[in-house]
Each structure stands twice: as structure tokens, then as C-alpha cells.
Length: 441
Ligand code: UD1
Image (cartoon, rainbow, N blue to C red; front, side, top):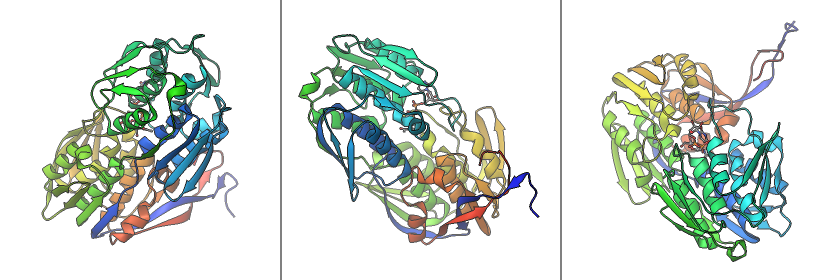
């Protein structure tokens, strides 16, 4: 008889057979972190915006649900999304959808620009530690918006004549705050200057689409972005192809370094991965680039390298867990410093289960390698940690079960499919997990 205090729900998981040798080619999708913001940007103008190369992932589905709630019709045709925006788009997003996708906070900027008002549910809980939105709100206030915080919602209201341009020096180069501010500023009267702006390729992608729509933007990709406001009626819908996903690409490139290779990753601009590729090369992996592709292989033992995450062009926090797994296979002691999200190191407890030698010291992790990993049941603590644990499973002895596959599916269109195509053995399974009644799974 099962204990009355324990239930056994099925949990989605990836089962990974270890000691894999991977080689072959992967074609990455459009970038998740760009597609989500481009979808929000479609709200700025009436008509049908066509987004090509949109990844088929859960986060995109969640953003589409937010747009649909606002009254936008979204049709998928292969990897193209047609977003038809009518005159009567709403200005409120509901809590259950915003909780599913924190990034949906970026509808605030375009809704304010278009309607002069937005009521967006508070993002609430988070999986990466402290993730504020104070900078988003301060920036919008600088454009004349009045922000009222209610229990469950943020209400933003533009002044009677619409948003007015302003200068805002971001205290930290936040990606989301830069994007929200950029989309709000597109129709603000006058010229807005965003200082210490985020420089990620996804910002350049968003600015490119906004420019094609009729916005006047200079400096995207540098630390100072200038936006000369245009009347909202001057914006028009466009067709835009999403930039390649550098994080997905970096994940497969790291798999190549872990599991022999050569693994060729196509559909990414190698200049978006300069530092991650330099770090792979520093470990001793062989890295070759050509326009639109990267090839990585491992022909000798790996050595430890130190790494610290920083906003672009620094080492991306979204590739830190994957590199940490690689470093468990490198000889020596590596110091990994996480400067962006304090919750990232939650993965370390999971990575210890298969036998990694890790020591946490504040926002530094010491990784001692090489370690012989053995199959274990681990939990994906977030999207990138989940992908990294799958990589760990590929080099472990035996079978690794990574619970929480849905975390990984938020950002990877078909991680098991691509890894199997490279010669790995990764499949989605349901596992029975015994959890105390009432505990969160
Ligand atoms: C985006 C990416 C995420 C990536 C991150 C950093 C999307 C959907 N997500 O997240 O995958 O890891 O960039 O490259 O594009 N912060 C504040 N106040 C704010 C805004 C941010 O304190 O108003 C802090 C956050 O808590 C965090 C840091 O700044 O510690 C970085 O956040 P930010 O650059 O805004 O990342 P996101 O846009 O949330």
C-alpha cells in the first residue's frame, strides 16, 4: 500500500544514454529571445506582420497566447507566424499567462506606445533568483508614463498627448528593459536616448524589424541607442526573419566538445558566439567557423578555463550551465563566476548527483575535473540547466534521467531529436516520481 502522504504523479523527463559519441550537423532555429520580442513588436501596427523562422517551442506558444488574449490572430504556417492585428487590440494581460512567461512583460512598451495605456499582470515568481523589472518601469516613467503598482498588476498610463521622448541611462544593461524602452520610444514625441543599453544580437534584430516598420533608430548593438519618435500611424507591418539562436547553437557546439564531434552547427552567425567559442578553444576543443556555421570537435584531453558571465559581448549566462558541464570533463580547477542571475547555481546540486566535483563560493563555482560521471536521476532546475544536465548525461556512464523536460522544451524545439541525429540516444519518457502530497513538482 502506498503511504497516504505520498503521491506518484508522472513527470516528463528526458532519458539519456551515456558515453555517446556525437558527430554530424544541426540546424538551429530562430532565437527564442528574439522571437518573443518581435511578437510583442507586432502589436505596434495594424495589419499582418509575418515572422519567419520562429522556433516551435513552449515559450513562443505562451507569447502567442498573450497576443491572442489581446485580440491578435496568430496563424502558424511551418516556421512562419502571421500575426494579424486589428484596430481593437486590448491593453490588459492576464496573470496566468504572464506567470507562464515572464518575458511577456515586454508587451508593456508597445501597448503604451499604441494605446497610451497598459495593464500587465505582475510577473510574480521566478526560477532564476532575483529578477526585477524596476528598470523597465523607470525607463517608461522617463518617457512620461505614470506607473501604478496594484496587487496583481502594473498599470502604465501615458500623458494625454502620448509618450514624450526622454534620456535614460540604464544602471545595468538589462536586455528586457532595453527592449521595452525601445518599443515604447518608437512613437514618443522627440528623440529618446537609451544609455548603457544592452547590446545583444537580439536587440539588433528587434531594432532591425522596428526600422523596417518605419521606426527611426540608430545605435542598436552599441551602448547608446537613439530613437526619433514617429507617429504610430506611420508604422506598417513587415515580414521579418528571426536571427539564429546563438544559445541553441552554443549548446550543440558544447556537445561537440564534450562528445568528440565534429559537430557542425548551421544557421548561426559565429560573431554572436565569439567568447563562448574562444572559451571552447581555450579548453582544447577545435573550433572552426565559416559564414553561418560553427564546427567543434575534441581530439585531445580538455583543460580547465575560468569564465565569468556578463552582458553581451561578454560570456552569456544562458551558456554558463553547459560550459560548467564541459568543465567537469576538463583537467584542473576552473572558476565559474555567475554575475547575471543569482539562481543559476541551483543546478550545481543536481550536477553533483552524477558525481561532479563542485564547490560553491558565493557567486563563484569551483569545478574540479575531470570527473567520471555516472547515470543519475536529476531535476532540470531551469531551461538552460536542464539542457546542461542532458549534456552531462551524454558523457556519464549508464542512464541519466533529467526530470522536468517541459523546462527544456520552453527553449529547444527538439533537443532529443537533434542529439539522436548526431548519434546520441535521448528520448522523452514519463517517470513516476514519489512526492509528498502538497509539494511542488
Ligand atoms: C534576457 C533573456 C535571458 C538571458 C538574459 C541575460 C529573454 C526572454 N531572456 O532576460 O535568457 O539570460 O536576458 O542575457 O530574452 N534586472 C533588474 N531589474 C530590471 C531588469 C533586470 O534588477 O528591471 C536584473 C535581473 O534581475 C538580472 C539582470 O538584471 O539579474 C539581467 O536581466 P536582463 O538583462 O533584464 O535579462 P532578461 O531580459 O530578464
